[in-house]
Image (cartoon, rainbow over all chains, first blue to last red; front, side):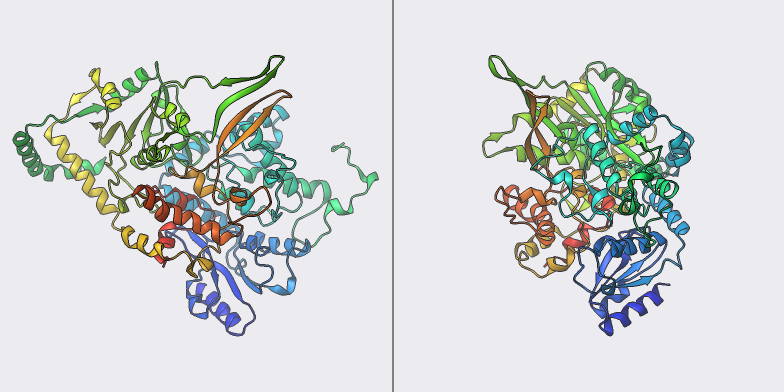
Length: 270
Length: 368
């Protein structure tokens, strides 16, 4: 698989169709890959593709929007992110050549890769199993059954350990604002002090901002150093977008907020 | 602890050698052993008078230092906590004082006195981080009271590790690794169902003085310790040539190397926040209601754009490359020039948790 990819990349660079290829290279051990920027034909042998390619590389596209970029996509959501960025006029379609590896690696196997990777670095299967038995891995359906008060308690506990490193925001392809609300100083929306309420405010406002744009690519969930289950939130907003507005992000549909009319106000939301 | 059992036949010779040495020197070593059960009782005893922080499982794959109420909450299986022990002494949000506006004018209220605490189950790499911070916060005649008010009242009981991960590189530094005592007050070395206890400081001695739970170590225990040191060394064969790296960095500031190596970095603050040695801070006021508030010292990160942004809008480290270079240069060049030690303990958290897999070892080796 990696050989075909390398060949494609070599041709693109040799024919000057792209200035840089953004792909995956071997990480610090067999269970990890890392994003890599290739602009010399000699370096294409660094490119690999396997089930541990978990990063969503489209996050780099708005940063390098002036370059002609070849980008490797390892899962369906990565592909959707690129289309979303084009839809939102963040990048020009003609500047991006997508090298689609997503069809070779199904999104399912990529998820398995994430789980294996976590175990690979810790080699403590027992602990994860024990945790599962305690029932802390929650599905969206279970989460929806909780009352408002129970949900609040649940997230209070999770966000209490957030260190506000903003890794979730930085790895998010649709969090491309150059001036995030938490960094503004005049007026200051969020104080530097880190506590549960402020952490929760940041993360939940971010979730509102990416509603209908989030591809549920799991980048924020994987980036969190303290294991806050952000996936639960992204799955929930993806589900809501579909159920309330019949909307799926990254498919070229018009965004529900831009087509919204006053008389279609929904009872549940009011 | 299978490997300890396996090693026993070979320890016999070492044992004899070691006992001879002791007799010759006639020294009294401060070494004890403690059984796991006694350790439980000791920690539960200490809990009566101290706040005890220990690694605790808080969610799947997340172990953090937390206040524990009994020994059973301590998670002994984790090699490393997700974030370092730094925040127990140098909190992310450190209240310096509170202020309130009253009819008599502004009233300042100092923070309550810090309680005696214990960091239990600290790894040697985290403990070494404190020794680096000690030198920094007590430098050139300035002593940071806020830091030392906690540091002086905290006893660090470290437990050495026996199975390093692929991200660990503490062996690249002096005083490294499994049995490094730097920064600890007591060091426990696991030996099957008991621990070898090394007393490092007076604070550590106070805990062993009671003597109820401790037994003097035998020569045989000391020999097993050496075996463990060796076996861990074998598990970490690769070493960074830090001297060479420092020389390369000295001339690499303008190098085109930085133009490419920073590209994957997304400039989150993760690496600096999980690090046991990164110390940069910001001071800000946090309002509480209309007339009250507090002044806080919070961690800041050289990775963030706001870090160097000035009031007029000028930003000397506005781009990604300069910020990335700063972090590497500070840890492995500027700090060495000032303190003659690297601002890194090799815990590998920045490698393990970096969302884009940046490996500082690789970055350093390539720099020239």
